[in-house]
Length: 450
Ligand code: SAH
Ligand code: SF4
Ligand code: F3S
Image (tube, rainbow, N blue to C red):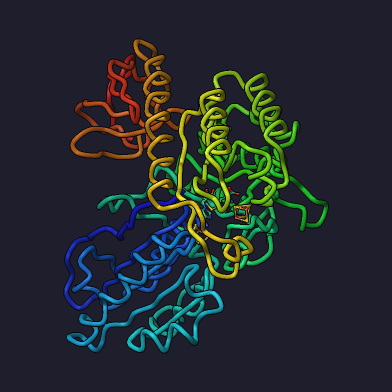
């Protein structure tokens, strides 16, 4: 789930206007929160810039899920010391999971940072951008503009629906940094989705660390299936996705709902983490391999053409060769369409950080590599099946001179064509397949303005 650092896009130059720059690393929740901070600052009259040196306000949105992400974020904050010296008027804010509960320590370590604010504490941005006093934070939910230099509205948007996590997986720092589960009321989510649709957004991805735990803390206890059905009614929205699901709550009702609702895409992201019951037990994942396999079977039986993705951790404390082999075999057996694999990284405060990190670095690399190699082969084979077929693609923009979009199953597709395709659902005939994306040509419809 880890994304590469992303920056806000450049807009038309304009003298005297204040500019902001947002640097983001981490999960989709962070991307959504950076988009919201950007929307707020725009409403306050700021414009985005890609050039950090030009910015009056810089926000660094951090992640600590693994040491590597933390190091990148800390390195980036460190690199701003110089800029602040040359430009004392610059205001720097740091947010995200690095900040929760660590404000005092961080303030000491980075004295030139003007503001540390926890995830979702947008109101505190007023402290460095006083113009925000004039902004209605509620209405500002939404101009989601952030896609690669485009200043027109995005085709896809992330919508957080449940914050925090009530699980306590032994390796995971997220519950300590994002707190207990809090669902947003259904009406609030629907208002946001309607506003997005009115702005031209065609696809929404409902977000949560355990998105399928949605609703248990709300009056009447609606669940994710109910929420999907409600979002399905919003006119203008063509596709609905949701991330990340926990196997424990992947109910029959949810599976049937995905199958029944045409706008809900046939794609399920269901992290398994390991293919061995003893490792799963020590990870505190609360399910067995047999249970997971049965859910996958049910999903495949009920949702024709469904694509599947998962997350894996290799080199968890005590993971033996045989236990790793079991994970490898599970991936061979299930044949996921996408696998995110990470090397175990001990995180402060978690249960497993008290156990010896005893799989040598070299061995973690070997296991990581083995899974990547296996998965590349599986993805190549799976993507080959699309050759000569026609798939529905929602075009979200251009990349390197070609139109880019995704299938309902979330596979990337590129095609060359004159005309304006952004925001359109296009039938594309697939002519080339790689493990990571498909190439093709549009069929049946001429390109036209939106
Ligand atoms: N809520 C999701 C995932 C949240 S974190 C779930 O339950 O699966 C995203 C991914 O980061 C996890 O799926 C896991 O594969 C990885 N991850 C989390 N903590 C990690 C750690 N300490 N070391 C390595 N990878 C980790
Ligand atoms: Fe972390 Fe587990 Fe919660 Fe996912 S379910 S966020 S891995 S504690
Ligand atoms: Fe990272 Fe926090 Fe997301 S640790 S993965 S930014 S919830």
